[in-house]
Length: 393
Image (cartoon, rainbow, N blue to C red; front, side, top):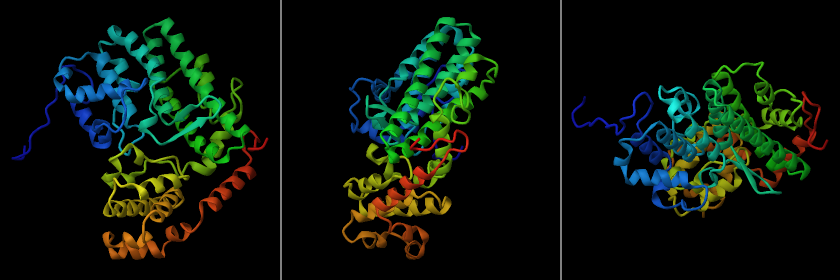
């Protein structure tokens, strides 16, 4: 070991699992420091998972003798807290599969399964900006439901393996309730002719059902299982249990949104974006409001806003059909006295020159109204090749 470098010490006595919880808390703090700085009210119902992380951060010694169920709970809390951030914690496979196959699972499986069901109702609204709402009942949908579905189906498979019949039924019921919730939201948005929010919801649903499919494959579920047939590939194939709106939405995502909502690798570079939950990235390409928030915020100085602009430009160059970065850029600089000129002293000359001459800068001239009108017309004209549905029929 190099001199001057100390090895990070694990605080965990629990064996046969992954990352130690004290180190996991450091990862949470790295990507979501605002959680530990009092920015979010963690006393609200449904946010106990956030308060749990804050408690352990202040009481690290309490982590020394946790059991499998509590470790699982901490992993869920960490992942729910960071799934909407720029660098989510890397515990996906643990909460989806490996912890459910731990040598002591028989002792803890009931508690872990009940916790998974309970986590469906956790309030993740302050830790993600990737969300959509059903105006009828204010239910929220985000990519967090994909995280939840991936854990729930892993729990379901573990319960089947361990012959826990009553909990199997309970878990299946909640999975079906989540699918119904997403179906209802999509139908309501189409009934409202809410083009933009439907286009926001499409990649959310595609992500969520994609997570569900992947973990079903990961657990090698039996394709002849009736439950498998009821919930597999819902965004790909028409299923008699559901409205074809699900397949239509999957096609809409592929046509309009799939190039917008990736891992946002370029946006990991400006660490200043991690200062506040207000800066969490929304669903692309409709990032105008996010750009306004970044441009008007007094939590970012001009040099940091310049760093964000460079990251947006780099993101566009990596994925030149990711128009959301352009929308964010336009609205960010519009909030500044002097616009882009006020940032140029903080950006290398050659980069400024490249931005000014680029397609990025040219496309930023479109107003929000014109940009969204183009998407609305395109959605009206689109016909799903699988279902023959359109937005108006």
